[in-house]
Image (cartoon, rainbow, N blue to C red; front, side, top):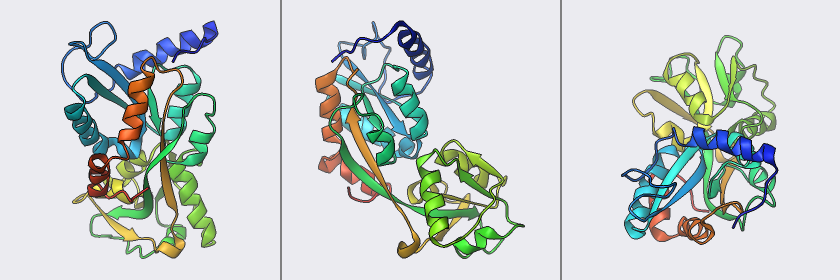
Length: 260
């Protein structure tokens, strides 16, 4: 399905396309005339940064079952993905880490499907040298805490759980994605940060984690939807539907995501 766009949005789309083409994606082979090469349809999926590792496997699995389709991903914070959609980025489907971001794109997306859920955890340096035991310890003025920015889904979730426990935190930085938060802790530039359970799992051996009890935690919901501007509407809808299949769900569970 195609939508007419003003000239200024066409220019923005061209800029977004250039950015998307620099992102490594699943599949192999050279693109041909904007498709997936060798007669295959190329689907471009904008996905939340916290899906980076698992979606590499998801893309491979989808292509094995759909040899006529090549899937490429562009990962970023959900708020940045939403901005790309509003600017007319040439993409086919969107997966965000929260419902508000997806709902804010009504008219730009097709039917929404929840594909997974996630929870928060405190990431700390290996061995937990500052002996962080829970959310209240993050209020220590001597502790360098990093959080995601408030417009980022994990940033909103983090602030919600801190507010729920009446914990005031002055972060040393506010990052544009959960992966940026994790990176700060991994590199030793921060003593602690709040990330998703699944992201912390990708850094085993570099960071340790402190569990946030369920009663204090927040549940992150991951909705997926085809974009109404997609040139491959049927294939985009099929991919979104497939994300709830047993094969895709098994990969998501193995990565630590919870059932939809």
